[in-house]
Length: 500
Ligand SMILES: [Zn+2]
Ligand SMILES: [Zn+2]
Image (cartoon, rainbow, N blue to C red; front, side, top):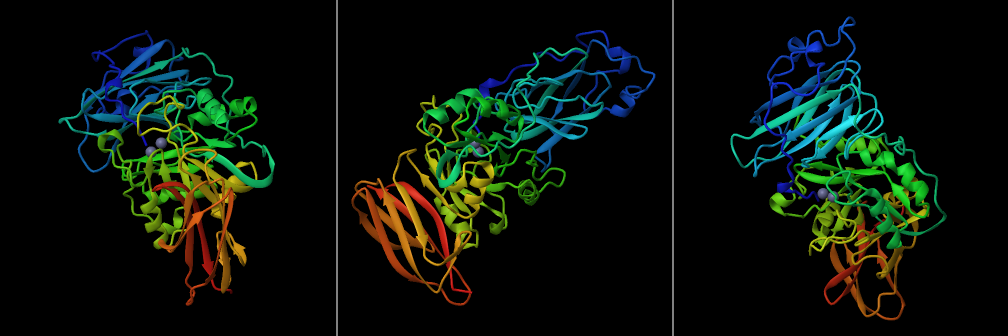
């Protein structure tokens, strides 16, 4: 999910020809629109004889949003050597249009603020929310603009790029390159967590500290902060993890396109989200996640909230076998039918859940839930990123729709299990239902109700003998606990194939 706040725009004020500082004229005639030829306008910027960059220079862009199919456009500008900090102020100049904003340096990604109106500020030792601190290389940078919602024509924009010789942000020594944490706990068991939440590093309203503290209070073993298209939060992970040693922080981002959102679970590098622009394809995003050792999990695939959540329903056509997981529950929204359609098309995607909490549990909206609701349990050999990803790859997950402490389901088939698939001609299907109270267990075979039984007692065991399908095909079983029509827990598929 991605919340849109139409009234949060920050005006950059009237566009001026030149402002702030004295260094501007030293390297470039700086007042131009995007159509200007930068190489001409700033031809002596990088000259070795040029005097050192001093003071502050403001570049201004103002223009019409280009028409066309591509949902992004780029505003290039040249950064001379010696710049210590860059600030991008931007405005979509409309109460109805929504533009997204990001920044690339000559080597690639430097941040994505999405639809937030706040300026982007970044220097060597600090950056504002959603942006990456680090060296400021000389060369061509690009403001990246996404056409999130264009209702008013002609759509216009205004951007000011401020180049500074002296940084204004206070250094952030707690930021460090992401490094995977060692296992916090060894031993195989079900670990409880949440794969989907946001902080101030994207469109959430609470700090990372508040997000982690709430996950701890809810008794979770792990959490993944899934900011929209940015990795800026990951440089705080080492510091957070050291101060919260009881809960594992999983790296990841929410790959947020205009035709669907997906979590890149276990990923700490950029994933191309600008599908349809400059030839970028969703398949490349999926490959990028896999190349980085992560899982590609489709978020809230059936959500349709119009302009409140742009691109939230999944519309990309993808190879089902490349999808590793699906959010069958996002806050109060189900993705169950999508998961089943994908499975019928050959996907072995695990079922997971995500609160998509943007407010560290403080929202009173009826469509919001706090971190941990739903809870996803993953059976893993240890509490580590690698352990949890391996558990998901084997389809060992259970989603508790109402949060931690809900009924638990442990389902399996007898026989030789490889990953999420059991190889046996005949098999005993067993399901243990724990702490469910007065509920019903539904067993599904290939998405169709196979059996329904009343659950009794604090530990209830269900058994059934099943035969594998013939002809080299496979059947899938999944399980849910229901009370008065409300789904309380769903266990991922176990697949059955005849012996090899
Ligand atoms: Zn989303
Ligand atoms: Zn989200």
